[in-house]
Amino acid sequence: MQNDKEMLERIETLRQQLANETAATKEAVEELRIKYLSKKGLIPALMADFRTVPAELKREIGQKINELKNEAQERINALKESFESSDGDIDVDLDLTRTGTPVSCGSRHPLTLVRNEIISIFGSMGFTIAEGPEIEDDWHVFESLNFPPDHPARDMQDTFFIDRDKADVLLRTHTSSVQTRTMEHTQPPIRIVCPGRVYRNEAISARAHCFFHQVEGLYIDRNVSMADLEQVLLGFARRMFGPDTRIRLRPSYFPFTEPSAEMDISCHICGGKGCALCKGTGWVEILGCGMVDPNVLKNCGIDPEVYSGYAFGMGVERIANLKYKVKDLRLFSENDVRFLKEFESAH
Ligand code: DAH
Image 1 (cartoon, protein in one colour):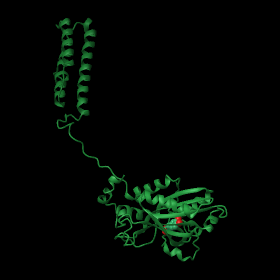
Image 2 (image 1 turned 120 degrees about the horizontal axis):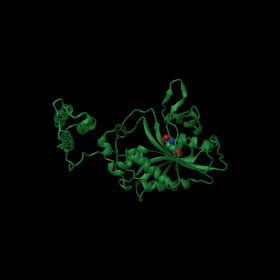
Image 3 (image 1 turned 90 degrees about the vertical axis):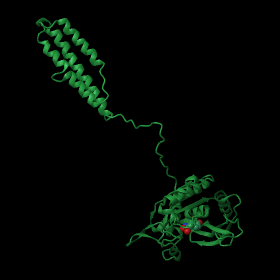
Image 4 (image 1 turned 180 degrees about the vertical axis):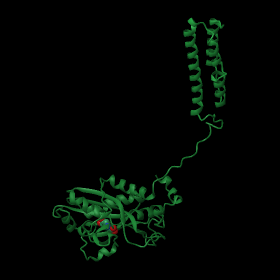
């Protein structure tokens, strides 16, 4: 006959013993389970002895044994789970003092850098940004800008058409189309720069590509003169190419400006003495410009008797070539990381 006091003591001892158990591996947890809960384990042995407990104590002692069994089960489950969540093994190779794997950072594309610089120079002179679609219609790219349907100047800009049968849906050949779009819905004063990609059907070479980037400028107000244009462009050239830069305007022709000019800067490599870059002339061409033709203002609903304005347009690749001495246009679109990495420090 099992002494009931002795039975209670055995239960208590086992409880304490269980509370102190630890396990360093999954296998050790399994050993604990066998020790306490398997058929021949300590708790089933307790249950076997329970049969000899006097009837009046069965309730109290039975309850205690059940509690002990549940506690053992919970403890073993908890130990098991702790190994499952850490995958069982402690990572002895983990060295928290080791230097991390370097994460390489991208850099801005040179054309983005140059475009941003152009925009920020004109931004500081009060120009805001205007944008327009790359897929355009004939009116905005040509007709409104004074290119009549059979005008020979259309040949200067070999156009890509989206659909063979629709001459009216095309890829813009210049960002001058954004001038028209803006003037159509804004009354002066207008002072904008229009950055964007343009397309021309040209054979790809070191000096030409079928797409490139431009920044167009437009200022329309009362009493705007060519002198205003010249001063703004001089300010731009000096900030872009250095404070000693000089400019000159050469007469030229564009259908949408009258008079029209091309602007040269004094060669920033030789300072104007003559070198390979400026082909000995001391000057390099950087943009086209002029006073907006009154017809263009009329086409866009602006009264040329009241308002006048100037416009200019430059190629971003051209400016980037001069600034960073890039000799081959194709480099800008080939995504060769060795080339792109050269601009990491230019930010
Ligand atoms: N649109 C001309 C081109 O693509 C560039 C240009 C020249 C823009 C003179 C102008 C300008 O606004 O006044 O070649």
